[in-house]
Length: 388
Image (cartoon, rainbow, N blue to C red; front, side):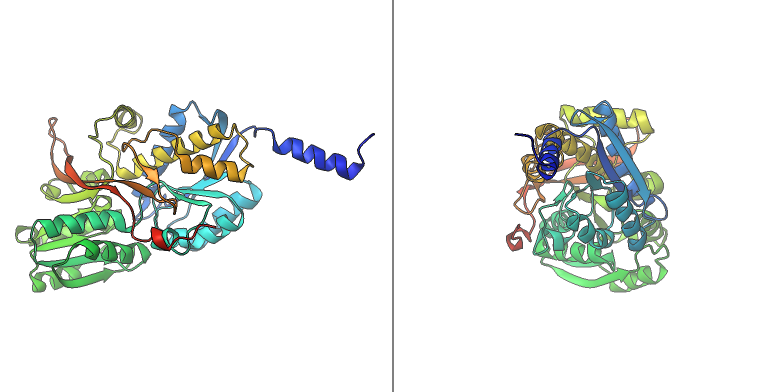
């Protein structure tokens, strides 16, 4: 008996949904200009290297990467995301650096039932009560690297610390994380404008407070400028600097130079990690781009590998949202940072390490891994996540 037109259409739709897509489209929105551009460029370059290592494919399907510069502006980011979601109909989104931009873009992505794989921004909101089945963080929760520094500063016995961080969600998470493990005196919490590049007033304030240590989180160009001005002001003679890896990574070291020698920082990844995946990534990144990769680049690379593994798991059927979600949660790829797993809130449970800036065998100023700070460390917000 022949099918009626409506039934035939439904049958054809069902058949179409069971077939693999002909390509995988990724919407990559990131900060590629301005003071935070170095971060977005590293994420982009790491992601592109991952796709190159996969033969230009994701899950065995040709990859189409659509790139937009958010100019570190939430409104610009939202416009770019809307285009990628509604006009280009991307299968995945990634790339955002800053948490305030992630919080602005997230609702539209989730409403569209598109998976967002964060290669950097890890706001506490999406780790806790606002967690979402369509959000996966491939980096860390914002507090984590700051928690690790707080533990180091506490263990080293510093008693009087000043904290310097930008006044935005990621900066607030930094303070929360640091103070979760550092229990000594905080002389002052100094909040700067996001994108600020003149720290004369803050440095005068720090000098007057006479701390024995300073913890700062100033990503991108902010951190580069701050360290230069801090050392030029002579404060490094009396105050030990501590930072999360974001503010003491290869992009900052390259711009600042010897002023950073002896500075401690925390990270979940380091270019000297001894595993085959990382060795290949670091060597090929240097060949491709002529610089040592940063943690941002490593996160971009891992994000490409996660998409590849998930698409492969669902045999290219990216419209199978439930299957894709389970495949992402399974994380069937080998990370350059070593092993990690996703918690129930889709944020990583992983190790964090202490690094110090020194000179390597070739005389380059770079990070050297000193040892572990946390093992299998989860974020503090996961218990508040009730995943729908």
